[in-house]
Structures are given as structure tokens and as C-alpha cells.
Length: 136
Image 1 (cartoon, rainbow, N blue to C red):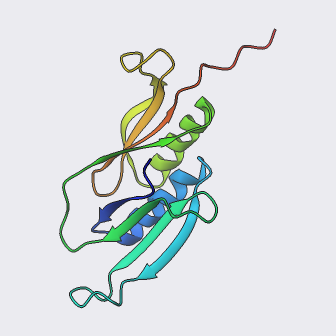
Image 2 (cartoon, rainbow, N blue to C red):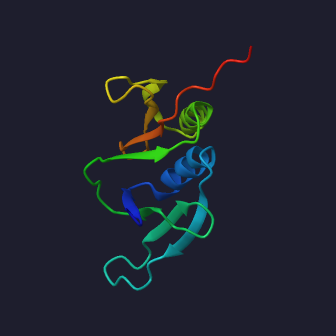
């Protein structure tokens, strides 16, 4: 349904580094990195995008003034990926906004983790799959 989405960063370098570390655990890599030389009002504006190979899905755009905080949730294949996302995001400068765990208020198998990025955006990794069956 959604082809791509953007968020905004006042500290572009910190935000790019944060997402590079956090999204790697979900299989997303840096797909684009450029300067908006075509923008006469901010020709040194930096942009980058993350996603699966050859698909720029999540864009970060440098801004001079903070934008309203937003929420974005990234799909995780399993609960371990959610936990890795949370740990890597915190190590990359994120602020804890909800440790990895079940969120049954959303639905039975919802498992998510939340962090605030350098601009205060609420970033989540979520898995909707039941936990793996324990080995006998």
C-alpha cells in the first residue's frame, strides 16, 4: 500500500547513524544518500533512504527546524529481531520508549519494542507472529 515515507532530522548525521544501526537488524540497508542541490532554499540539504535491496522505502530528510514528532513501525520477521532492533537503537543513541514485549491490547500475538530517535520520533519494530514453539 505505501510505497515510501519520510521523516525529518535536525541532526542529520546522528539520525542517519541511528537508523543505519537500528534497521540493519530488520534487514534494511542504506539505499540512497544524496544532497538536494536542486532546492534553491536549502541546496545543501541531505537526504538518505533505507529499505530492502534496491527499494528506498524510509527516507530521512534534513531540516533546519524540528518537525512534529511522528510514529513509524517497521515489520520484524520474529521476536528476536524486535529485541535486536531495540538493543541496537539504544546503542546508537535512541531513548527507550517501551522494551521488547507483548502488547496484547493490540492483538494476541503483537510483540513490539519502541525507541525515540534523535528528533523524538517514536520508532517501533513489531512482529505479529506467535512465539516459536519451545523445543521438546
